Image 1 (tube, helix red, strand yellow):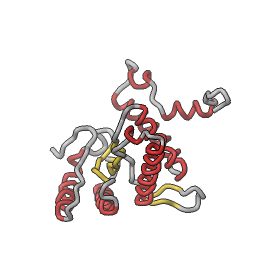
Image 2 (tube, one colour):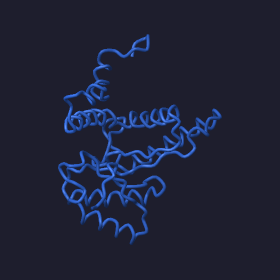
Image 3 (cartoon, helix red, strand yellow):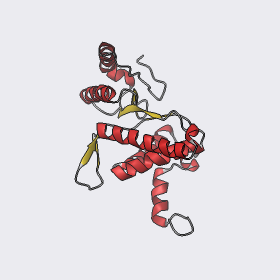
Image 4 (cartoon, one colour):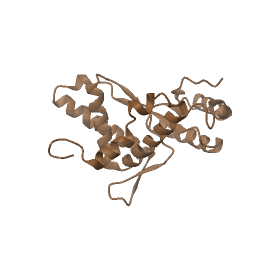
Length: 208
């Protein structure tokens, strides 16, 4: 960003890759599959930029600031946790999913402390929670690993993890019913371990 507060050409180029324009979404010739392809391109670019600790922390801070501007007092975020680590600031070490959850809690606590100090704590009183997400393109065996990981994170962060979701275009490559056995088994295991992890399928899908 230059001294006039304007983005430089490189920043504008990145912004155009990440943010979908109205024309890209609503153009007469656009299709459902076309929008999904463009959205997936944006999320891949976005994810790569966030896979570093300092940027990850900055993003949480900025996300909360944006929520406050939009009068949002509570949020449930859907991070993709299939990749099991992000890079530490030194580029040599990694931070696993549990470490990322700790970063989120620390960032929220720091932000709320800053707001309280400024007499603005009432603007974001309820914090945020995490919906464990994984893509619907994975195998049944890999989904089982993700479900197991979700339960472990719930045990470590019972007040942070609030649900599980499978994300991506609803009709491909695998619909929810493809994972029926794994999902039902997950519900039974959660009940046996007294874990409350509801399915929060973002497209309104059901097991039926």
